[in-house]
Image 1 (cartoon, rainbow, N blue to C red):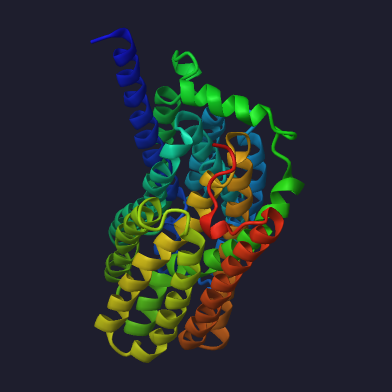
Image 2: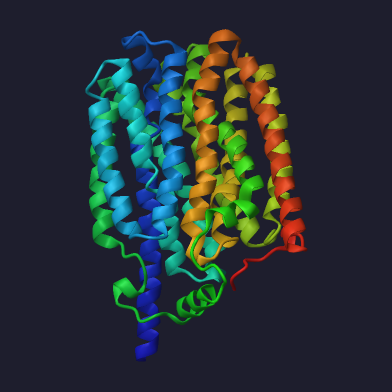
Length: 429
């Protein structure tokens, strides 16, 4: 084996190591995030909280998480993403341990809101590391793989915390997953390097070529005004898309408890089908946009959200049947997770150059989690004042709006660039 072939084999090994560890690390962030969803019914009963108060916990988290995304995305392009992720995970571990140890709603709101900020250190910085280690030709496929991490993390966390709440109480759902997250933080720090050069590689040809092209641009450093000029319609789509997805993530188990009289353990197990189906949907949609529908992901996303709107409109009609409700949840999950991947992962990774990947991803995830924060208190308030049927009517309208914003993104980019984004390839090739 020649020296060059040995070098390339080692580089490919590192690339897979980065993908696997990035995937596993971001999935592990969910241990300290969606554990609240499973704990809601038990926590609400044991502390005598209203649905609105519990919803405010979720909204506080996602508001701080959303604004934290802007900061973390900005920092991810300027300091070591490896250190940023490591520090954020450890601090989130501390917040989970504290949250599981207190019983005062006001203090819990402060702690869980702070946890949202520390949780924001994951998505954009890890996406930056993945972009650093892969060429533009590889990124669509890598983005699709990485996107399944949050789906799998959601499912595994719900499975673990469902068992913990049913057998040990709601506090264990924060203590044990929080501790596990701290262990993963240590593994990330030990196994990851920010760039190929940090691992001892001397500028892979594709890395040097793309970096040099990026430096030749008029504005090589990420500029938020420039980014907003192109991406504001996509950010609006992220707001409504985030509201849809997290309304079901946060309140899915509670829906089955309230509407079908299930115990929390059974409700959690049924709700796990939602992210499991989402994993399949994410892989399928990622394959489509990396292959047959390459460069047509925005058109595909706009049409798909219209389908989601129709399915959500059916929920009140089938709510009397547990089987039909669970089946529809699985179908919506398989589609909704996958199509949101286009907004939050694929488009930021392939429509921005290496210098601004983290900043663009941070902006879009900021908008996505503004929507998630609206879902927390919004659904809780609608349930208290109206009904679950009203919830799904609002979500159906949200899906239609998301389709409209994606179409607007295509139109706006066409106007700015003089060519349709439906056939638009990455600017820096």
